Length: 275
Image (cartoon, rainbow, N blue to C red; front, side, top):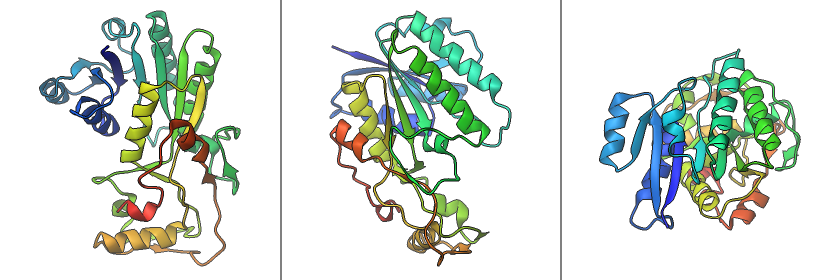
């Protein structure tokens, strides 16, 4: 039976997921629906046999909701990184969720972030650790997560808290190259897009109901050491970090229980395999 997968918005990560869903060896027979604000992207999606819908948060949802009945709905709309006032964003995402539930969506997957734990702890954080958001973006994600939890009697949902995303065409070392930066002893928490796609496919195929999952690598080196190695491997000027020799500090995202629940062995458990 064909499975409807509705993805909003259809950006970098969704592109990898869409390619996996529509590949000849996909474990899921999928009809993929994606939203974008770009006319050019709509044309590109049509060529890939993806049903494209032009949509931005705050728009009327009636056309989008035509595809929601019995669908898996993936919400992947990150707020602007520099935004400090996100009440409007939060309320628009919540309204979108409510409309999807009213349209009898089967399963909501909310792509969240490990930044919900803040940046002031040195603890190892599991899926049951309490959020401590510090930024406007993190607070918005927590509010949306809490709203989903309040709907658990009406809809199945899964929250995926992702660590920093890395891919073959995206590595933080490129933006850090040649810069002078503080806190080289801070631990890193990264996840490769290939492992994220595996996680999403597993959740789509066998829904993890009303729960929160972590997707993160198993190792957490100091960023001063890691990004120097990465820059060298990528033939980039090395970043210069202070405090790299100091004792390692910062949060550690433990995703072991989530990978086990999904029956996945991450291909990129070691961040040194990501560049």
